[in-house]
Every structure is written in structure tokens, then in C-alpha cells.
Image 1 (tube, one colour):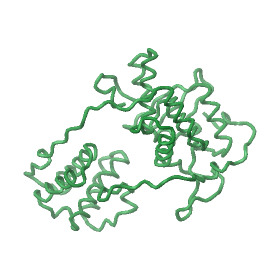
Image 2: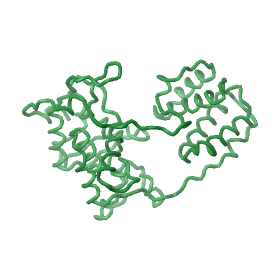
Image 3: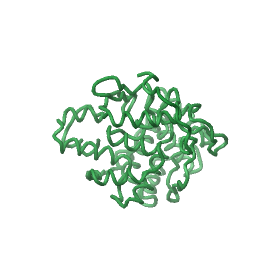
Image 4: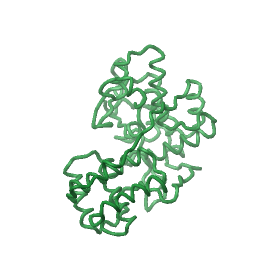
Length: 321
């Protein structure tokens, strides 16, 4: 799709298009929980083994989020013991897992990520042999059902969002069943409005997969209207340019980065509180709700799985879309 899709009368920049997001509260993390900031930007990686591990995960061609989390997990271990993690004993590592579980009360998903990161570090980078700690650490993930909103609840929470860029982004996530990262990184060329029906080309999504997603005509008009407020030649949801931290009020047409997933998540959290809907709902709940509503309308499970970005459909995976 080319930029001609959005041609039309220019619309002046709104305060939102200038990048001002008022009233967003900072998210506080429980004391002692690992910091999820980018490891390459915030970590003083002075240990040779960590540098070597960073090179290893690059060679293994892991997805960028996986690389970040693997390096961050090893760095947090080094920070905890204040030493090169390559010098730790198996018993010290065992005590670290107990610390994560008993004191920090890390969730099963967090524990699993740390376990696999440290397993890779010690077995493939440090070349530790004879260690059984990774087999000893058992992580039982609950098989709970995801939160799902009714159609009325979806409309209620979306109506609470007033800022255009977030309102359009969240509506797009629901009407197309997108993950938050897929929505914010959408590019102008990915909107195929001339086809019947219109569709989105989701590129390099989870697992490095591409897919096509149906796009209702009404959503096409919303995207067109939002794009006209900034006319960025590449991005549908550009981030406001920044200088030394604070937001700079310049046209979004000059931005080269998409808006952050964290900003969308925070806006949804505030909208959820204001609307009084399900307290466990997150932006990803919109994806679950989209899938559930499709199935309720009789949409075939196999075709739904392709639309959701799943390689195949099984009953066990239906709660993990």
C-alpha cells in the first residue's frame, strides 16, 4: 500500500499529535523486582563473561526481546551477588532461584524466562558440567482462562479513551485482534485498502511470522483520519521526537520511531479504572475478546487461528492466543 491511500485535505496537528500525553502515571515496580529496561543502555557490563554471552545470543539469532531478556537475566544475577556470574557455584545459583521464588515471589512466567536464560549462560557460555539445578527447578504454570470482555464492556472501555492516537490504536487492536506491539509498529504500506475486503499486512510478528488480517471499512476511515493529523510518510502511530527525555512539541511527520507499547498499556490501564470493567483486563484482553467474539459468531476455528497469528489450532492453545 502506498501513501496515496491517505491522500486528502490536511488536518492541523492536535495536542495529541504534538505528542503531549497528560495525566499518565508512572508505573512503580515492587522493590527488588528486576528492571526491564534495555540491558545495553542501562547495564554497566564490565564482566567479560556477560560480554561473551551477549555475543553468544547474537550468534544464536534469537528474537530481539529474547536477547534483551537473556542478557538482562544474567546481569541481574551478577548484580545480586556483586561479582562475575561465571564465578558462582551451583549452590549459589540454587539460592538465587529460592530468592526469586520466596522473597520476590516472581511469577511462573518470569521464573521460566530466568531459568532458560541462566541455563543457556551456564551450559553454553560458561560450559558448566554436572550441574543439576536446572532440572531441580520446577515451574508449574497455572492453566487459567484469560480474561474476556463482553462487547458492551469493550465499547465501554474504548469510549473512555479520549486521546485520538490511543483511541484509534486500541480500537484497531480489538477490531483486528492485534497484539500491542503489532499495532504500534504498523506502517502506512501495510494497509491494503484497495483490496476487497481491506486487510492489514502484519510483518515480523511473534515468532518472526507475517500474516494478513481483515480490516473493516469503518476502521480504514478511522486510520485515514488519524494519519491526516500527522502525515508521517512511514508510520501510522509515530512517537513524538524526544530531546534529553521530555517530549518536544514538533510535528509527528518527522518521527522515525513508533509510539511505545508501554504508553498504550498505561492508557488502557487508566481507561479500565475509569470504566470499571474487569480489573484483570489488559490491552491483550482485547485480542482475547476479539477471538472469542469471532467464535461466538461461528467463524471457523482453523481460519481464526491463521487470523490470530497461530500456526495451528488446538483446544489447549485456545487460551494462549
